[in-house]
Length: 122
Image 1: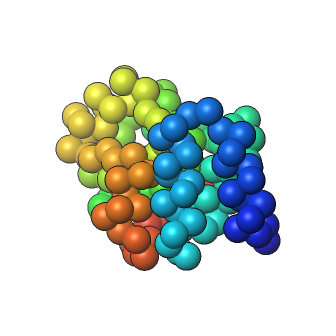
Image 2: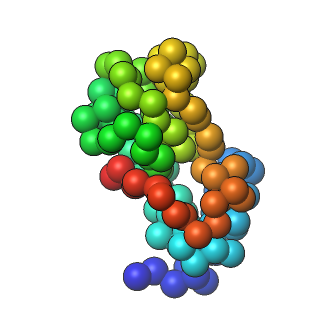
């Protein structure tokens, strides 16, 4: 496990202010510590995942965490709540058509500090 101090030093190198705020808030809540660790690493390590993968790996009504970007390839037929750093406009449109919801990680940390009911897709 990487230390909180190391995560904080990695955060100083980040240039995206929203990402920095997300890492800092995640560090304040112990349940989100592993997410802070991934966010503080290189952005090349963040995943890009298509809607088809999310569809395969989730159940109806799940809250799915993606530490990276959601892309639009594939379809969503289930009502899901997707939490990610970024989402493409087409993916958001397809998610809304399926009556799903989208939230960014920063807002989800604020509303769910204990990370309850979240399925993390890696």
